[in-house]
Image (cartoon, rainbow, N blue to C red; front, side, top):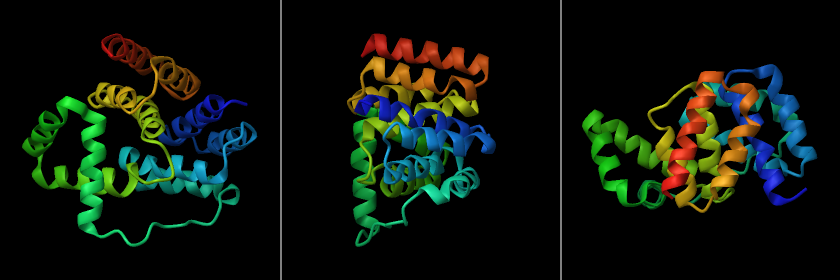
Length: 200
């Protein structure tokens, strides 16, 4: 298996978890391991679920696959300022030239939640060192599509490309998750990925 194949094997796992298909999560995790994904990578993929789907979905997925995962190795030594700085740096990378606009839009919705997104979602989870940002962003696209959350989809599709994913890698990730995405949401996600990729 190539590294790309190993990465794509994470897509059905994350999509099944996001869609609440607990019965499919363990089988998808086993398939990812057979494709060469280490247990640490599976854990990082499942941690990515938290900022996009919430703790209940994350806990359900972890419960299904806990026997396949290594012991948790929490990050230590990072204070609030370091996490905010790390989160801001990744936020800037994901949103590129639109980062200031996205920040302003989030703050206009709710300033406190905007702070949580940058410090917690980006600082504590998405910028963890155990996974490349381009892979986390491809996972984000799948998680959003599986839940039918359209508003953030184009931003994270663009973010995957800005972080180094190719259009073909992004499309492959989406197609691998197709069994766990409603047909109308899959069609919307395909159109979004194609549109964003054409502008990249």
